[in-house]
Amino acid sequence: MAAQASERLDALFHALADDSRRRMVDQLSQGPASVSELARPLDLAMPSVVKHLAVLERGGLVASEKQGRVRTFRLIPGALAQVEAWAAERERGWRRRFDRLEAFLARTGSDDADSSR
Image 1 (cartoon, helix red, strand yellow):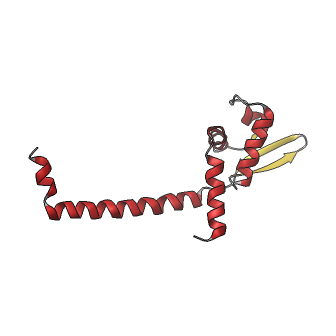
Image 2: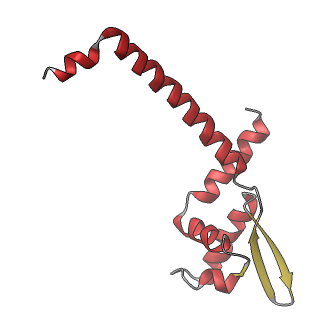
């Protein structure tokens, strides 16, 4: 994995590592929301909410737009694609390992030994 891709993945995982930020992402999956709308369900002071949103922005998950005094955030389409690809590759690797283990157990008759207990 290239260094830049690895850094991007690190930033995405860091952004998703906090429950409050994941809740904001969940809320934004329903559509754009202002900072105050995102803060409402959280038990956080406004400066903390703003810091969390900055982490989400640096992670490339959200973008913001200011109209007058209101800053609105929205999810960036496809932002989680890199996380999904990384997780899918890990899953393929584990499936291959389990398939090999299953084949080994079938060849060695280990299933018969377990069933006699």
